[in-house]
Length: 183
Image (tube, rainbow, N blue to C red; front, side, top):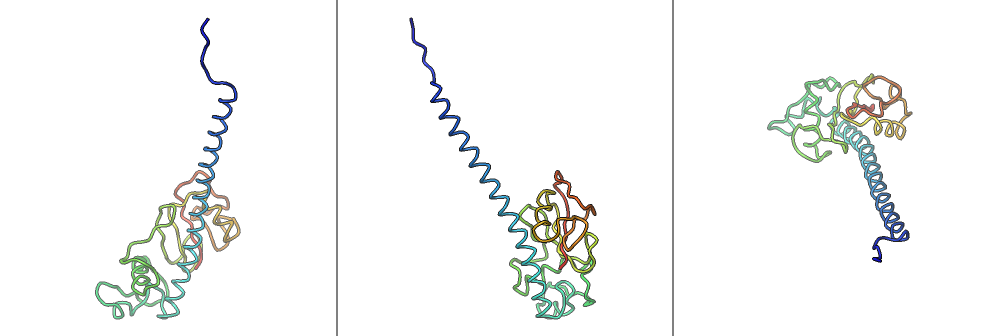
């Protein structure tokens, strides 16, 4: 009679425990990465606000709307009309002015991207918020709600942080929300 070879119950249990520990570690690692991205987005809102207010304090105009920017930096820098409003035509120049002043890293007029891959914009009015706002495009719904709860009231249609969908609740399955925060 031949003896059959195989794994004992103890050996199988040990393998299952190891697999469980590995899966738990991977899931925890993904959660930590998502939390780090959320923190980066929150810091982006705060850092960009500080840069815009520093520019306003230093040059007495909003970046992009600064009528003296072309004289100050010359070259391809375009000055705004100085009316205190960042119009659609001035929006690309916001980043150029902030970068020329050394308040934001990089060069040119391209919008920076946030941790979840969408563009960051500074504009006049957005998400039913009057005044100058910082908007982040292509934000996942779950993440937008978490950020709203951290920095405002958790209501997507009220407060200083809102979604353009104009709904109090966030669509948890959405991947392309635009959210704005009052400057």
